[in-house]
Length: 114
Length: 115
Image (cartoon, rainbow over all chains, first blue to last red; front, side, top):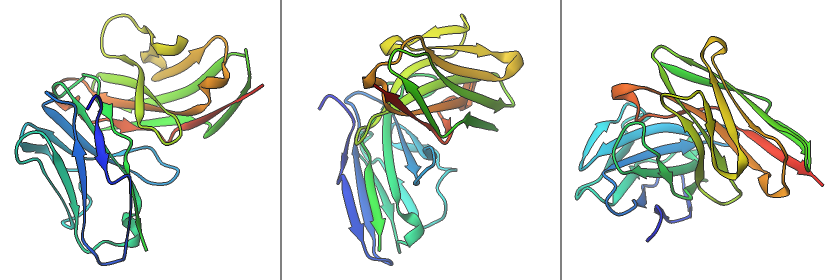
């Protein structure tokens, strides 16, 4: 596709369940980012991939959060034992290379934990 | 470390009036600065960015911003507001150099345009 695609667009899950959020970056973009946007806040950095490896995961809030990008393209953000505080919009972005270049954002996945 | 403060969570202007959205930043290293716009149910779209060089940066849709190091500001302006400018605007900063991939966003300013 032409842009960054995120699926699902909406996800409602029960507290304690496991969820996976998917991101398809723009073809050829080596850098991929995950951000989380809580209500009334700006996006907050979670993790940055350069190729297949996580170059910086310092923004992941705790060990319930994990992300992979096994083939250097599609990425999955995984959240275990979800909590109500995890409810937010999860944004994915990609760029041709890391650092200073324009990051193209997807529409986000709205996660609601009930 | 970097931080961003956007003054005014909500700004209203009349159609045809000047748009001014304020952004102040804090950075321990020379910054890269960005403005993104978010329309309802859409992803963030880059309006403009400053990395190096000319401090007055022109972006899409008639917006521009000026990097003022002495004031640690990067305010966004547009001479004449249009109804289609109604959206939420986010200012963001990153470190230059090795840390430039990580954006730190402000809380956003929602712009309303009154006909």
